Length: 187
Image 1 (cartoon, one colour):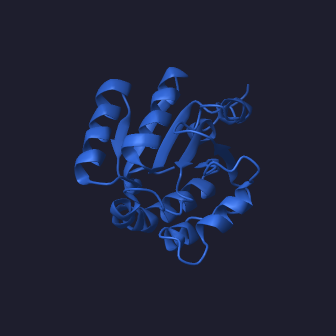
Image 2 (image 1 turned 90 degrees about the vertical axis):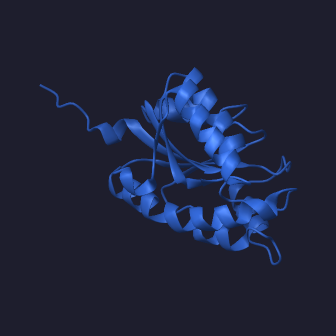
């Protein structure tokens, strides 16, 4: 008789737009949140990797349709980029997955669904920027695809406490997302 797979084998950590230069209107307001996120997210990623949970980066392509993930990292760590240090702390490791996205949702016009199907994922743990935009839009689409959703509240960033808190409330109320802190999620 075949053993049931551990729950971690059906879970992925989806990290949204953390490779980011923060050079957009409002980016200066996101920066303090992003710095806090960049301190909280690495231990979560280490636990995920140690537990065999796939780490998937879904990142904006910054309108550069001929780019690849290496070029996006290079762009975001360039001298003078507001998000340079945040990006440096959150760069993917060997074995992590990544997709580039053209719009807010990690699901829209990307290969995320086939990747999740290939990995047999049913649960998504989500973190990233911005809580009230790309994380919210991605969670909405994850809900439409019937994935169970957990959002790590201290591993997300927004322009303000208000934006962040309203998004978390909507994620919980309307999408049934579990909201917890990074250290509460065990991988």
